[in-house]
Amino acid sequence: MNPNQFASELAKKGITLSERQLEQFHIYFKTLVEWNEKINLTALTAEEDVYLKHFYDSISAAFYFDFSKGQHVCDVGAGAGFPSIPLKICFPNLKVTIVDSLQKRIGFLNHLAAELELTDVAFYHDRAETFGKNSKFRESFDIVMARAVARMSVLSELCLPIAKKNGVFIAMKGAQATEELDTGKVAIDVLGGEIAQTHTFTLPEENSERSIIVIDKKRQTPKKYPRKPGTPNKEPIE
Image (cartoon, rainbow, N blue to C red; front, side, top):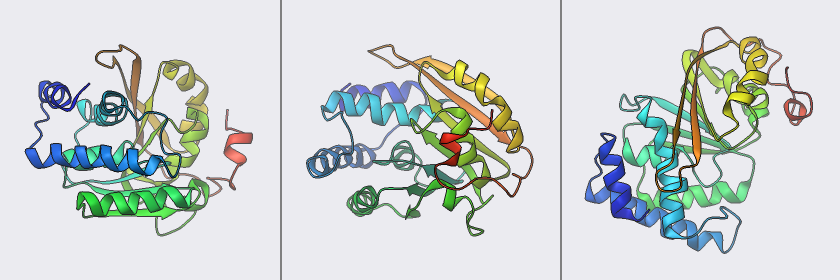
C-alpha cells in the first residue's frame, strides 16, 4: 500500500487526510526506518508494509469507534507508537499517553513527537503493572488501547485498571481473537469489564484477518489488580 492508496482507502472509510497529515505520515515512516537501524522498533521497513500493516492497521480501530471527541487515550506497550500515534495524526484533538517498558522506545517516541509537531502527548517509561497501581493514572483514561501486546486474559489485567468507569478498553487482535476472548472472559469480568462488540475484517491487499474488540468498563477494578510485574503473564486470571 503506497501513500496514495493509503489515503484513498481511508477516504472510503470517511477519514480524509489533509496534505499536512500525509506529510506527517511520510515523516513518521522516514523517522521509523532511520531509528530502526539503531534500535529494534519493527521487522517491517518497506514503505508498502509500514503503510498497510502499521499505519492503516492502527487507524482501523476508528472504523468502528469514534475518536473525534478529543478523548484521552492510553496506549499500553505501544512500541513504535502503534496504534495511538497514527490515530493522533488523524484525530489531532485526541490526548495520548503511551506507557512502554523500554527506555529506548520512549526516546524514539519523544523524538518522533517533536518531528511531527504533536501536542497533548506524554510518554512514560514504566511497566503496565506498576503504571496501573499509580493513583495518578489508575481509572483515569477514557480509552485504553493495546495492539499485539499479550493474550486477552493477560492484556485485560494490564489495561482495564487504568480505564475509567464508563470508559472503554479496545484490544486490536489478529486471527486468534475469538479463541482469546473465550479464555479471557473471566479476567474481563473480574476486572470490571463487559464485552461490548467484536468487529472482524480483513486488511486490504493481503486479506489477513483482524479484530477490534471493544470492552466497556462497567465497574471499578478490585484494588489487588494489576498484580506485580510479570505475574499476569505467568498466572493469568482464567
